[in-house]
Amino acid sequence: MGLPYRVKICVKEVKGECAMGYKPGDCFTVERFYISDARKGICIHALSSMLTLISPFLKGVSAKVLGIGEQDEIGYIQCPDPGKPYTSGGTVVFELRREKIG
Image 1: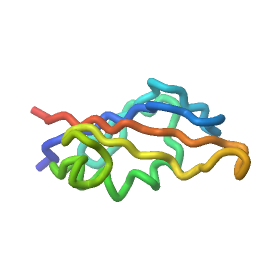
Image 2: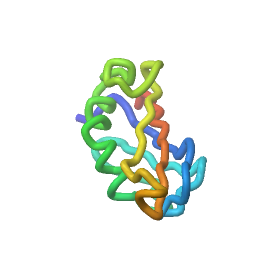
Image 3: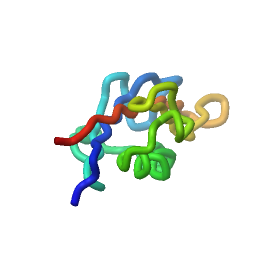
Image 4: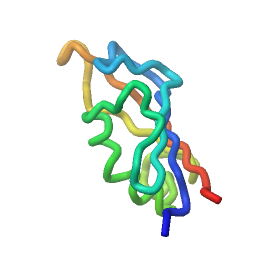
């Protein structure tokens, strides 16, 4: 039995220079415990910041309850790279948009 939702994850904003080269509008999808459409690949640091929240979000817990958004179906997560002057990278803000399957 699958989960009732899929989550489309898109880059909303980049502050500094992302080491992966993410740009606003880059997206991938999480559905039934797998990731698809990851054309650029997935940054392991960004993924680690999302993992504990994606599972309950896929199962129906609202973004508001999870503390990641003001609406039930849309949440935001930021990668942990602080950017300059601490690293040569930058911070990426991701929008997680949940939609019902079937």
